[in-house]
Image 1 (spheres, rainbow, N blue to C red):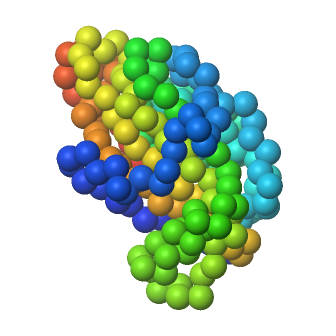
Image 2: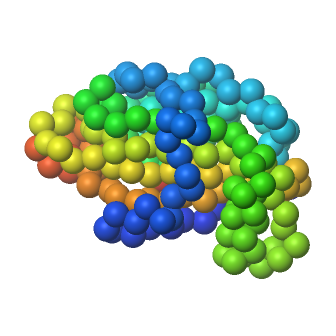
Length: 200
């Protein structure tokens, strides 16, 4: 069992990197400051961090957490407690009351599994990998706390497993800000202070 991280990044908008998402496909996280999805019970047992997980949370501030929801808006450096393991796709002070939606779904759709299988085979040496389940979480055009601008970020996490190994894709389509005002960021630029953190 293992987890492997693949990061896609392009400075300009690159929605071709993103797995399909939106209101026709996904559930929505609540529109809130520092909120989270409800507990999401998984239809598979997910091997991750040397353990098996049966549920997770999509946290508004750019995290997936595997024990409890996380409302912290200030990213912390490693090490992070394994009592609540996390994936920090873009841990920052997201405020989607200002702008944006946060979507999530788990799927066994054959087309999605075929794409996931192809991606893992293309980006790794695991040529026998066959995706059995995919989880997609997308932070779509989300704003930062204290924003007085129209700057927004779009990023995505894709968990892919065959039941033995788990791969994680981090897809970044458009990153315009790094910091909310509670972390010392500038309200008009979304920059400065304690910036966002990415953690596997």
